[in-house]
Length: 269
Image (cartoon, rainbow, N blue to C red; front, side):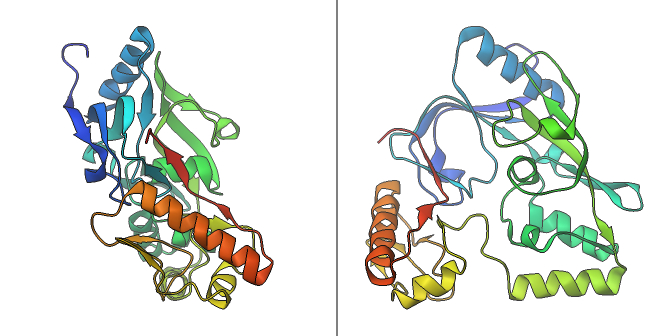
C-alpha cells in the first residue's frame, strides 16, 4: 500500500473474526480504512497491481468459506459511523453505520422508514446498494476519485464503496416514529439476512415442514425464527451450506414449495 494511508492492515487475517456468521478462512490482507483518502488509495492500489478487492460490511448476507478470500478485504472504520440532518426529512448516514442504529436515531427525531428496512441487520453502505431506500444523493469512493454519484447508478452491481448517502425519510413525529420502530422490531418482515426466499410466508412454510430445532453439528435453525440459521460456535460454512440444502429439499418434498438461498457464498473451500 502507498505510504501515508491512514488505515490498519492485517495480513493472513481469519475472516471468521469479522463476519456475522463467524465463518471464513484468511484473506491476504484485511484493511480497515479510517478516512476517504485511505479508501480511495486502497482501491487505486488494488487496481494498479491487479489485486482482487472485496468490500465487507457487517457480513450479514455473505458466508465466507473456510478457504478464505484471495486479495484484499476492505472494511470502513469507525470514522464512517455517523448520522446527521441536512434538512428536516433528509438524513445523511455514514457507510459503516449499522442500519438499526441509524433508524433508531431517525425515530427519536420523528422520522420513519419503509417497514422492511427495520429488519436489515447490516451496515448502511451495503444496504443502500441492496435495499429500497429513497436515496437523494450518495458519496462514493472509486479507484480514481471520491465524489457524488446519481442515486440511479446505485445497485447490487455498483462498482465502488459508499462512504455516505443522504436518504429521505417520512416525518411522522417522534411518538409515531418510535411506535413504528417498536412494532417493526416485535413483528419484523422476513429480514434481508434470511437464508431463503421464494414463498409468500417463508416462516410459516419452514414451520410446517418441522424445521425448528434442526441442528447440524454447530449450526442450527432456531425455533423463534426458522428463516435464519445461527452459528452456535465453531460452525463452518460447509455445515451451513449442507443444512441449507437439506432444509430447502425438505420444504420442497413436504410442502411442494421451492425455496432458494438469499445468502451469497464466497471464498474457496
